[in-house]
Image 1 (cartoon, rainbow, N blue to C red):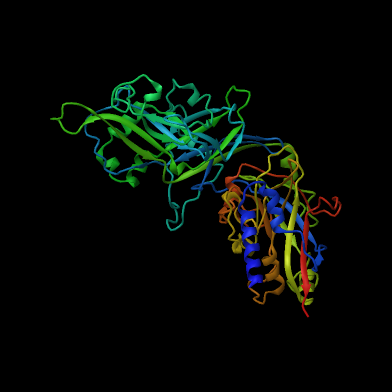
Image 2: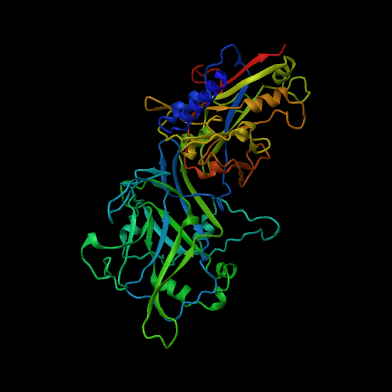
Length: 547
């Protein structure tokens, strides 16, 4: 009984430790573990790692999208723009008669940011928030943001084969921008801070009750100029707030024919969506980019109308358009020469000195384990030797040491089966969760380890994967596969997406979707024997020999 109680107490202690996000990177490395008492260790397995460019990547209908400009000290500059269809919040809407957008009505776009509330304000004071998933100095950086009517129809299905979903790629920006040349943007041009000097702001957005003519009301419904007595109508978490052109939406939505608003399929043909165009401005710092969930965004159209001719006064109303339907994220890169040269000629025989996994339309790393198949039986000789030794796998890890080279390192990297384009078993089997979802699957690993404020390494567990290669008896699943390594924006999404052209020298046209969503890259030491042993990519197998 004492043993059972002790084991329960130990398990609860472990759960308490790994559920705490404080100093999680260090804890993560301890959970994975470096203590393997009584086990034999093998770390002389042949290992070849190299980097290949992805080229243009499939970027339609991503779970989250990037918007802005991000400059990396090593990789270069990336610009992200975005196009989305719109959907009616209710189809066949009845806007009334004598429709009019008055001076005190607003037409605005709201896109919530990823944020965390850090303090609660008293009364009608604002709550305090911290922005998340944003890169660059958002407090000071700004860029030029223009919103246009999109005139390029985004199909759901392939035009030639309607049974296949349509794919759009990160390099198709010109298809959209080519149709808006000379068109006026939809921003309210008088509001400089919402377009030519756009910033991601962390302040809560508060909407107060008014009398319909712009005057604030107190709790008794009386007009007040006392800021403390204004009544809060709605609180919105920090987000993009852009005032839009009233005339455009009055003409295209409120005065549209009933036939154009009968359902959302017809509506998407009528109004094909909006396009977010990003450019650097004259500010000394235009380096800021945010990850956004545009599916939570909407355009709110305020207006006045009558329900019938017999109604004497116009009443204030509102109608929403949701940013839903098909979307595409476009990436435009100005890559540094060193990065371009580094991934231009990978050495697939002995590996590369440095590895360069980078998100977006960047690059991924390929890793070949166990060396060549000298005797031609389709099994690498080193793998066959391990099978013959009948060893029992206890643990297996890949450890990547970071070569800090002015880049901001991603918090997670992702190891997967690049032959079949699926996650490895260790990822699939790991259901561990943390308070911060970015730290989920912490036993599988790939978590950035920081020591003394310096990013040092990533460590990934592949014990189940190696165990199946060595101990598995099913010839369909125990084959040695090429591994892939990418950065990831979301460790909880192990799905794959397409690339426009196969990786050079392969037929592989897939990358993890989390890599496409990430704007970051990292530089890692590779597998060459000439690299200092303390920094070289390390593959360790801990095992015992069966009797």
